[in-house]
Amino acid sequence: MKKSTAWCAGLLSLSALAAAYTYLNHVYWHKTLPNKLFRRVQTELAEPSSITGGWIDMNPDASLVDGKLLASYRGGVTTTSGTFHFTVAETGKLVHLDRI
Image (cartoon, rainbow, N blue to C red; front, side, top):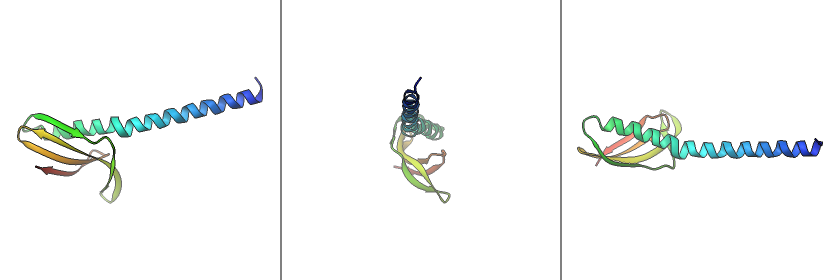
């Protein structure tokens, strides 16, 4: 194999790896993590009643949690006992919870 062909193959492999990393990073922050956090909040709020609906914003915001700037997600859950709006940090800590 010539040096230029090997160099091009290496560059193409590195580009493919970078693209795959970027895609998986996006899927984690905009799909996997918000869904995981939403299920966690749902189970916390469902203890005394049952869930009838809910939503979570898949685009993270920034929140100050314990003096650190973390990604956070806003959402809402409707139960048989009421409707709640919440903000949950990337660590799973409930930053804000309002009953409407």
